[in-house]
Length: 380
Image (cartoon, rainbow, N blue to C red; front, side):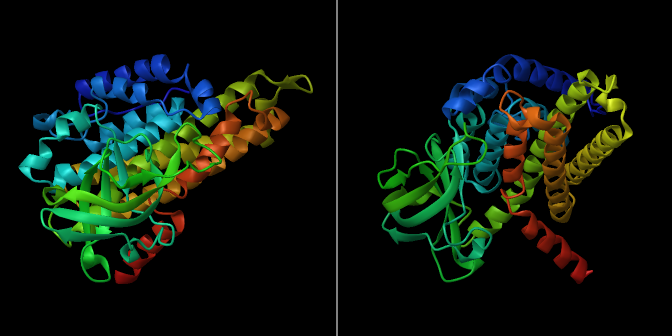
């Protein structure tokens, strides 16, 4: 199905055409093999970086494209429609560049061209084994020792744990609560940073996640981002943007599942006619198409608030909540439309179904999004 898009500039239109071309040429042919092998497509990320797609929302002075978030999210949607692993990797990497871009010193920002260009891949290390949603209770510690911080602790569910070149480590440099949290930028080669065995996940098998153990890892003090005690502020600001990224990924995945289900329903014959002509199924597909359009509109509306410099945190939570729930619903129904065929790996809806679930969990579970929204309502 062709998605009608209203874009702010001709440049944005050309950018989405480039994204579609790259996605069809570089992503779609590789997804099945990489998913079967559980192999992360690092070279694909380099290709996207060299094409300028990893730094879209960042300033040109650092090698970015200075594109509105509204445009960046539509790029993510296109990528997710071909291969969710890659779209999520772009979203996580963009999130990982945010602390340095928004809060870093001039010296730290000198790293941005290689980050944004895709030569350096990033990881965002916030969650912990005992503190997923309760980020303010994290226990990973960083103790100042001369010109270094000595980091000890464990992070969990880290995307790019094994493949990243740099890590944003959210750690405790002070007392309890959010005011005691800081953010350190660490190189992959830092002694004492030890990625653990990759988790055996339901979906996104070509994007291994793992725990990261910090065993007296020494990070230079000049890699402290934003000052001591600023880590929680940085983390929450980054997550607002990251939630929009996940919402866009959900829209792209849902659209791909719907498109496949519609094509199948047009071709599949039962009782002498295409099954899409039966109202029970046709109406289901109509509802799914409507929900996807609503999720896209909600996501882009939040992005426009961000682009205008207006508060968008609550709208980002709404977009993430709604879009990822829609993706789960659409992929579930897409499997049902295919019947038994939808349950086998010969058809991609089986993979879409497995992948959709994680989108309801990452960047803050949907229960957390409901908490954020309800608290805002309670405050008036």
